[in-house]
Amino acid sequence: MRSFPSRQGRPTRWFGAIAALAFTTTVLSGGTVTSTATAADGMEVRVTTTTEDGTHQLRSSSTTMTPLTDATADVSIAVDPTSERQQITGFGGSLDSSSVANIVGLAPEHRKAVMDLMFSPEHNAYNLMRLSFGCSDFCASPKGTFYTYHDQPGSCAPGGLPQFSIQRDIDAGIVGVAREAKRINPDVRFFASLWSPPAWMKTNNDLNNGGYVKPECYQALATYYRLSLEAYGREGIAIDAITTQNEPTVVMPYPTTQWTWSQQRDFIKILGADLDSHGFGNVELWIQDDNLLRTREFAGQILADPGAARYVDGVGYHDYEGDPGYTGSLGLVSEVLANHPDVTQHLTERSYYGVNGAARLADAYRNGISSYSYWLTFLDSKGEPNAGPLDGAKYPQQFGAENGNLRNWWVNPDYFFYGQWSRHVALGATAIDSSPHHDFVYNAAFRNPDGGLVVVAANTADSPRSIRVVSPSGQITATLPSRSVTTFSWQDQTPTAHERATWNGSASAAPLTGQAAGAALDGRLATRWSTGQAQRPGQTYQIDLGSTQPVKNLSLFTVPVDDPGGVADHPRWYEVYTSNDAQNWSPPLAWGRGTPDLTNIDLGSVHQARYIRIVQTSEANHWWSISEIVVS
Image (cartoon, rainbow, N blue to C red; front, side, top):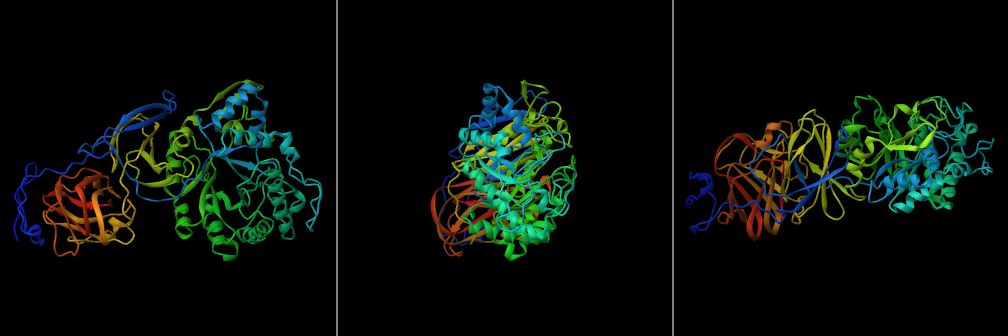
């Protein structure tokens, strides 16, 4: 046994816990502190910013990736590009009847400009749009009048829909605008919702004011859905998903239909079987399509029934309760996803406004939302056209125009805030782990299919915030203007990481309750292992990779779980050793000083090892915590 010579640039004290490792007696000569430089140093980072005061609207600039340092900022966001969350399946809004009427009413050159702004890959590139089967609550028909595809009295017996037709949607331009969107952006997908079936299918014989679907009409309503899919398909518009009912618990003097969760469960079994038997099994069924507070009642109960759950592909949410305070619990989305990981989660209706809206959307993504759809695209200054009774002028849309003069149209501010997401987070991206919100700054992170990373940060404070975004590639430093949303995007160069699922961790320090060694290997930055005591020389954290593997790089995340001060729990000084049997250990392969949020460790060359041991060699008043370890 021996103690090791001191090295320039680090403390000279050495302790028995290190010497107790079984090394071969080789004296090291020279050596340098491990560099945190990565292949991404100097790489360009694209920065896009929109401010609430309008001084920046998708303003583009750039900065460069630099090595990790001891520098701190008001807010740090650590990003783990190796983590896997939900896949992003779309971002867009609605082709509601009222909005389409204004788009169709534009002069050709203005219509082209609006459509390009929405769908062109050079602009906001919206790729998921909501349609209504018949009139929704915003319909460009005369005041107080609404329509379905079979308003003439029919029968709930087989063959009882002889006059079914979507011709009014065609005449209104809804089909044509949808077809044009698809031409501009071939990635555009559509989902459709029903506000009310024909009145004669309902207990109140009315499109409005709620009313339940007669049980004997469940099969006829399933046929109605299928005929709608077929009719749109004949017009060249494939519907990728349908929701089983818009807001099934809402009763209003516009098209609304009531369902209990058990009624919807029973109908889903009929609808799913009908679609499957007629070749529409690939059309996804999204249940609930209602406010978050209904989640345990609708999604929870329906998915608990195997006969209904077999047909369910997704859950749709609206986020209106608590408006404008946004008090609805997005944690319910995470709850559904945890219990049903194969069921996708969709925010099917909620227009988010300004920086606070961007912050809420960041929370939605962090809780498992796969797609986002705003509601209402283009009403004029009086909220027209609109059959009523809701006042459309109260709800900002993407576009507006002077009432009676569509030539005087404009782009509303939220268009630019939405572009902070839609222009950077690609279809098929994966949400990844990042630090929790802190100091009025909210964030969400993504990995695009091409390997690029995206972080969207919303500063809801009335003053600027300095920010430090860190990943294994290095760090980005910037200042977020007050009341702003900023998107950082760069091409990640993190080496391919080893799979962590079979690893085991152990540590010398007794962990706190819920902060055992395995918490640093569970793929979640929201959990951590911690010493629960001040850093002292000789404290160790050890990984068993399960088999001998090539090891060159380590990344130790230190993300505060519930204490912002926890960002300082990085190792003050460390050494790294490897072994194949946990008995005979290498000389120290790397040594150095940790950095806040994330410490990158380069072993210099590839080492074949099963075990990795990290040893503290100095002391600090802060605990030593590891949120996650990435090995490559």
